[in-house]
Image (cartoon, rainbow, N blue to C red; front, top):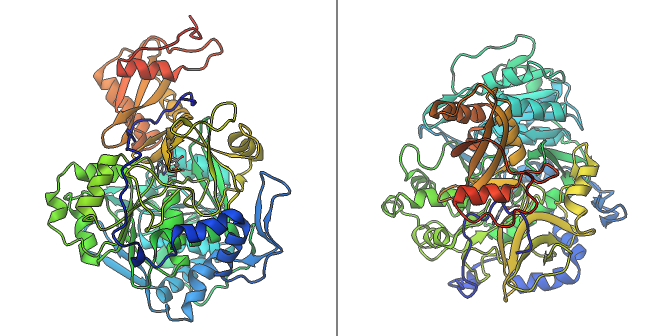
Length: 639
Ligand code: PRX
């Protein structure tokens, strides 16, 4: 294998290159045949993207489709003026989709439903935009959104975009420390949150976390609070405002104009984990991101007027941004959002919702499929899932066993699975089938239209078919990240310096004899836990913020449900003794100081960590030790 420190080879993506699953009737899909689009797009990617862009509305046209004069700082649709909200909402209001459902929302307790037509969603977004405008939010200002899966997260994101303000959504499971870092780094003036969220019937106190985070955040002037759980919270009379109070003010009423922005103006930043310490702030823009999410959603999910589409991702992650909020609305689709999780109170919750709402397209993550599969076929078999037409998977490699279960038990062998490989950075699907493409369980098939992927060895040479190497993308694409916010150098170093001119994805992959790509896992110090992206450095720094820990190293170990689980090695400070109680305390500490998703499964107390002479932790050795495997070449080990 060409790659060095793959931390994520867990989900055992050993599918077989010869196992084709062919569509029952490729002609049933409205989207054109793959080859008919792929051929011309390969010959002229810019012409393909220009054609896609023409399906959207622009206030002023572009001078150039792609400006690569300052690569890798690529620009798309330069000179054009638009606003993603104009295309996601405004343009539907005066047409036949005015009364079509944009959003159907169901509460975790199963007792509340909210349905919003495009007209109603637009009204709520206008209201929110008027309110935040009255608080001084203008084009370019950053707003942190820390909300659960409730309709207000749509209003908040779209209201920011409407004004040209830059949203920074932080997943409402991150700790006060993580939230504070993200608020500080983005210099947000406003935070939009809720009193709490519902998690498995219990209240998770979001407002308390926000209070903790903004106490020392000098940039925050206002906090808007949505009442969701109704428990008592502290309200700072000068800083904090209930949304339902603000909504009664005259200022909230009426239309709020959608601000015309440059295609290259920022739309949002989204923090994600990287190899080294600080999370990276991925920056996306209005024009190119709009074209990329619109086009990929249309082709891959074969979206139809009457469809009901459900993406189980949280809006706090990129999948929620691109394929819960923007991509579907840009296509005028009906989106379903569920507040709760997959198996509370029973493991049939999702299947029951699919039946109840007649969901046609269902997009979820391998970890969820694996966890539901464990409960057996009887749960889904209690429900009529015949409305399903297309399934989707994202976030990590899907192991063929889970793929087959999803295909057979949920999709009744009728529904193709769109295994979409992409990243926070790419903004849109990069390796993905369309519904008429022959599939192979465990492979995302081929790069999307206009894209070319390569698998390279360390020196930059393409590896032979079947061999593993570094996955790179060759062509710029419209929804690519533009930079890392406030850190252009790190953008260049991370993605463009290993192989100049090519985008380094950070994944290892192999290509088979049919040109199908099999993504294996990360090559850097990123661990995918239940599809969530965590950096080893972030978890390690949460460890050493505990007084007992002098030094820590974490690795990912294969886990049947989560794909990878975090396994930690901790060196204790003088005066502390290893114990089960300390182990529990450290787990709790990580949960509170980073996020419950980062909670380590295993913690080993050790005397020292294996390091190279230059002081780098040898994770490879730790992984071997944890799994009881041979430790390999130890010649570079210090000591
Ligand atoms: O390792 C790949 C994995 O998730 C990484 C990107 O994580 P994130 O930025 O959090 O975005 C996740 C949602 C798009 C990738 O580098 N990954 C994502 N989708 C797949 C995948 N690995 C294999 N197959 C996929 N379909």
